[in-house]
Image (tube, rainbow, N blue to C red; front, side, top):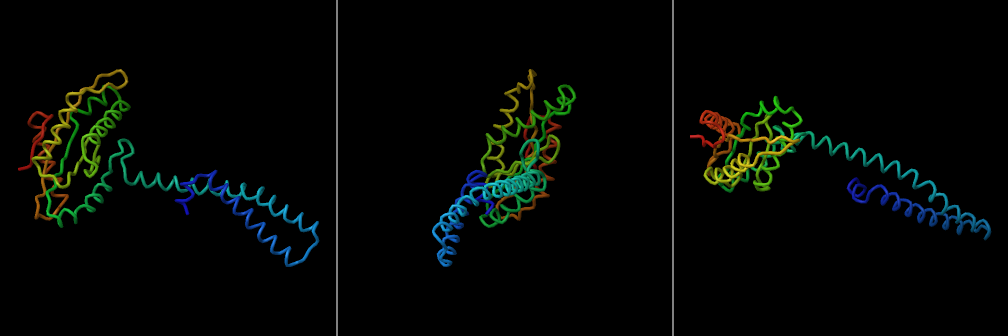
Length: 246
């Protein structure tokens, strides 16, 4: 019912309900008058009333009721988005990330395909917030996630798990192919400074990779720990680089 309401909108539903109300009113009135055998004058007046009454009443009642139902639907959708996505960047939040990985876990294990997890951190992000303010910092994060979406596949999972920390899961991808994909992203971020509110902001990202090989049980927590260790080594190596867990 809600799907029909949201699809047709307030005006469409109000018009449809009013039309149905008029038709039903006329049919019921006609049936009663025919059985009662009233005079022609009463017959005509009653039919007119059967049309006028729902024409006036149905739109008022339906309009407000549909408005309320649409508002409830919108609020539920908003709550669902807040429970699933990071409010700033639109990436998955931590809880939704683990749920999403669980949905592909069985498929990965059944098909015995590789999966690579990337743990990434924007280099020296705190000075950006300190120097330009959090509004600019927020726009930097949004731009970074937009870059990830442009470069990654629709089947890849993007999640924000910290202030400037992100986790990406690349199903059906071994670690070497994943590094090729993410190195392209790393280069794009480093070679294209952001122009935000009159500031030219240079950005770079460090990335740690871990792989769940085919024929292995997928343990997400373990992959995250391995990728985090690789990320730490990437930071030690001078940042703006990718390190595979070994």
